[in-house]
Image (cartoon, rainbow, N blue to C red; front, side):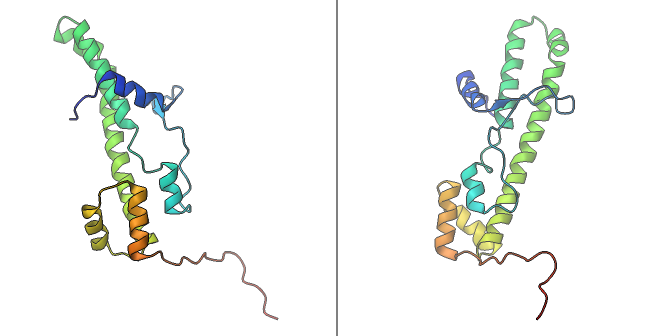
Length: 165
């Protein structure tokens, strides 16, 4: 699927994450991000600076799982024993790759929706700008802001309207 990174790189990336306690409903996850994602109402730039759209941490967990499987492969003598020993780890790896793919596609969909909502830009303009741009997401935000401008978003008033005099 993906090239396995070196053990040092994987461990440094996992050191940036916070370890999770065991959860019987999400037993395959061992780490989570340290920062809490902002609410949906938060401005796009704040979400970008908070790291809500950073590369998924499930990738590094899946890479760690691959390392564990490779270690057990060298320790076992025959393939049948390896299959028995690594059954749980292979299930963990499968679920982590599924979480990674889902998380990344959700982030990309959310980024597109937020950019279209924030700027005076069409979907075609968004994709053409994205193809021609080389930089970080924050730099892309600044580029779109200078080229297209931001919608003047009026906050909706909730509750009862004021009484007329």
